[in-house]
Amino acid sequence: MALTLPDIDRIAHLARLELSSSESERMLTRLNGFFDIVEAMRAVDTTGVTPLAHPLAAVQDVHLRLREDVVSEPDQREANQRNAPAVEDGLFLVPKVIE
Image (cartoon, rainbow, N blue to C red; front, side):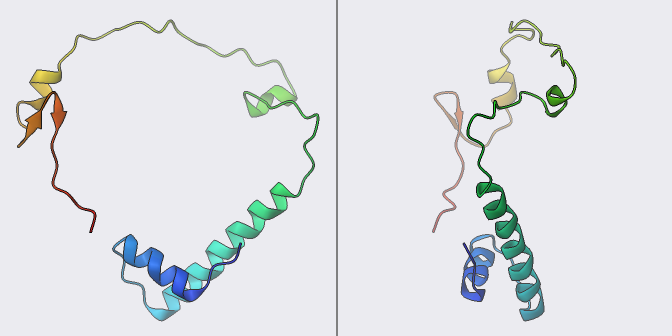
């Protein structure tokens, strides 16, 4: 997948960024370089390779320190929403930002 300058301009517009032409060119080069790396990784045949839970698991036994999934703090939703400008049914209401 290769991006073009119009793609960079569109992405910048969506991200509300103003890029100069030199910045757009540099961003195009960097993003296309990233996609080249992704394509190279996708080309590797990983059939039969077991996924790792941790990168070090390939060279040593890794014991994950997991804790019990229990509630450790009380529900403070109402206290947290007291300062919100608008709340409805326990949810924060925000202005619509999609054009």
